[in-house]
Amino acid sequence: MIILDVPLHVTSIWLPIYGNDPISTGSLGCGIVIRPGVRLTIMPAAGPIKYDIDHIDLTFRKLGVNAEVNYSSPVQLGVGYGMSAALALGTALGAAVIAHKPLIKAAQVAHMIEVRLGTGLGDVIAEYYGGGIELRLRAGAPGVGIIDKIPYSQDLMIVTVDLGKYLTSDMLQELKDKLVTLGRRYIDELINEPTYEKFTELSTAFSREIGFLTRDLEGRVRPCVRHADAYYVKKKVLVFLTHRDEAEALINCLRSVGYEAKVFEPSNEGIRVVIDKDTPNKVH
Image 1 (spheres, rainbow, N blue to C red):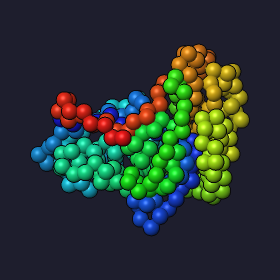
Image 2 (image 1 turned 45 degrees about the vertical axis):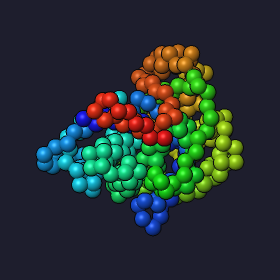
Image 3 (image 1 turned 60 degrees about the vertical axis):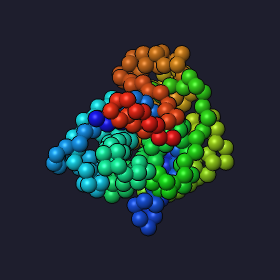
């Protein structure tokens, strides 16, 4: 049995970059890599199994592996947590272990499937390497793109609220003109000053300008903002950056205004792979 622990990723600022092929296509930007994420168990199977989840079925087909896979996660697909990327990435790395193929090549397959399906551009590279608060400096798959890290306090906690579902393919189509203009300006500003304070400031401002962080939503959560450093929205995920000693107060406040929250920690490491439960390997 192969056990994989894949972090999630919530982008805050991004600029789609479309290359000549899927491996060089991706996004510039930044976001937070968080845990708990997706836990997968994968075992070789005698024949092909159809899961009716494109990211899993296509990955096994592309890598030529038959396997049984089960997964669990505190989040759902289509909300904004990079869940589809985590499924593709976990499946690809599990299949690579079974087929004795390089993990980096499998990660590139996962990225290309995300691009092909229109479900993500920068999640795979962020989840593969980790980084807590990450900064994507060159677009592309793992091994092609370049990712850096922005320092943050060790007691940082991430509190989220699910607001619904919004397909990435629809979002990219509807916001493509805005993203070209806003994405470049915000990313350049963050690269010039890659600090936690600037990350929080720009993430909130970008969410407002792109239209995710509405006046109605800000008005509803205003009583709770005092418990957080900042907040932003990606698709349908409302994200608060807070600290360990404020997290409970923030969660209670959100409940008082009608929101149930989830709690995560930033993850500095990427995929964790355990083979036969005894041999741990970490992807850095």
